[in-house]
Image (cartoon, rainbow, N blue to C red; front, side, top):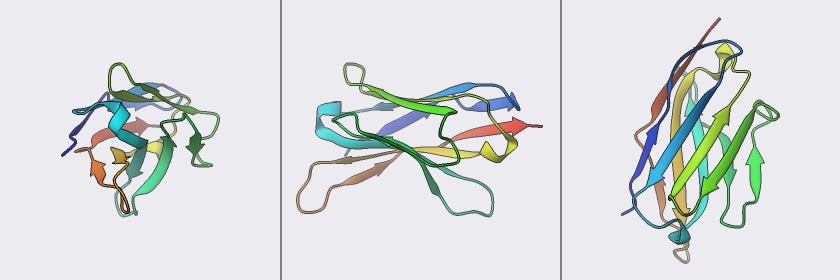
Length: 119
């Protein structure tokens, strides 16, 4: 069972920056997709960004050009650098990962970290 622990959330003014970190309890070489999701009050959880083991990256349209996802395999950590933050980015951010299990990969979630952007 892989455990994911997020950190780096907090309160920031609009236009500011935060960097989220997600540390995995297992080697990254066991994990394929690593990503970040977010859930705002009253809304469904949505994909923010993900990065694969081959470093293929995908972003939600709403964060393109502002957020950057990266992974450090040596530290078993994935990062989300968030710049030019907007009040609409306020949400609980969750780290997510899946492995190479076949035929259905195992999927893992962190406990979430709150990001609040004030106007």
